Length: 204
Image (cartoon, rainbow, N blue to C red):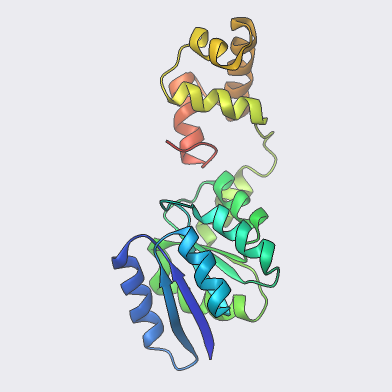
């Protein structure tokens, strides 16, 4: 039996997962958690074979929870379930140690097969997600400082305010903004924020 832990802050999603797994003879849902902290505790107690992990949750998000679980249990097999296909988000999850990445819209079609594949030691990523990763594989990534500037732009700050918050000159901020727009292929600041959100580089 493949023992599964489902982690999601939406009861409806957990119910859907429970129903799908309940129809199978080779797997069982042994526990549910509604945030990352609960997930880490449940994992410690039960050591599931496969953990299904949402990314956007209160208290502790999915990526932090993956890092915490894998830090203690390097053999943990975790599949991310999310509505976000952004390549930066996917890359972060895989770097944290996820073995699979599924979009919630494709759960009915792909969930059971993905659980079995990950249990068998394979890695699985939804085809839509793989396309998104491939599309940006050769892009030059934003530096940590540029991501910080993009977050401040998204929060509605002007260059002068960003300069004050980061203790740098306004000229430096203009230079960061120029680099951000060039790297993201953005037409203006708003477009840069839109791309950053879509790709999961920043979150609101």
